[in-house]
Each structure stands twice: as C-alpha cells, then as structure tokens.
Amino acid sequence: MTIHTPITGLLDAAKIPYRRLPHAEPVFTIEAAAAQRGVVRQEMVKAILLREAAGQRRFVMACCLGDDRVDPKTVRAHLAGDWRRLTFAGDDEIRLVTTGVKGAVAPLALPPTIPVIFDQAIARCCNVNISSGDVMLGLELAAADLIRLSGAQLAAIASQDR
Image (cartoon, rainbow, N blue to C red):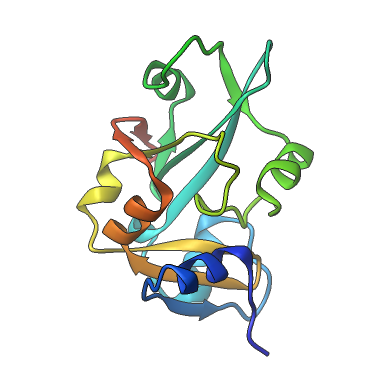
C-alpha cells in the first residue's frame, strides 16, 4: 500500500523529485527515523512548531538538522514584527496547526500564516530527509527544493545538541 499525505501531494503537484523511505514501524524521534530509513542523522530535518507563550498565540515552524537544537530566542530574533517569547507547541496544537502528529511534522503544507525558518546548515546539504506527515513514511529530497517549496527564511537558529 502506498501512503499518500498532503506533503507527498504537494511534492507531486510541484513536480519535485523525492524518494519514499517507508518504515517497518512508527517512528517519533530523529534517531528512530534515521535508523528505519538507513540514513545519517545529519541529513534529517527536525521540524519544530513553536508558539507565542502569550498574546496572539501565533506559530512559527523552525527547522534544524538532526544533531542540532532549535534555539527559540534566536528564532524570535529573526521574525518580522513584535513576537513575544516562544515556547514549544503542545501535541494538540501540533495536530491542529500541521494536521500531523509530534514526530511526523514537516515544514510543508502549512497554513500560509505560519512563517518557516530553517537553520542555515540545511542549505549546505545536498539531500535531506523529512517526515511525510505519516509516522510510517519518510521522504528524501534535495535541500534546495525543500527550501524553495517551504518558502523558508535561512538564519543561524540552531545550537549543537552533541
């Protein structure tokens, strides 16, 4: 059975080549996904949904490579406008905003009001791995295609998690 998601639909519609990397079991972490897909963590893109801690409850999608951590303070500094302190979105917010579940979020097919910021290290990769929006399927595609299709801003928003 072939898994279809809003992410694969978007890639197909944009005629962006990608490789399907099915999982033998559901995965919810970078380590488990890399192992299931047979790829290195340094090519995995972690997509982190952040929200304002107070006020308008706006959201931003921040992404970094698998061995790094998103720094919410640095993300906030790169956002246009007056954003308050950022915190990690909860499971219910992730489902509501991305239609995915924690561990299967991708920086694509998001509502247009959500800014997307990628750590600049992603642009140095040839290919990257993202979630398809389904815990049973990963996707590999050119980093340049992912950046272009997501409309992401590039900035130094990560710190190393090693």
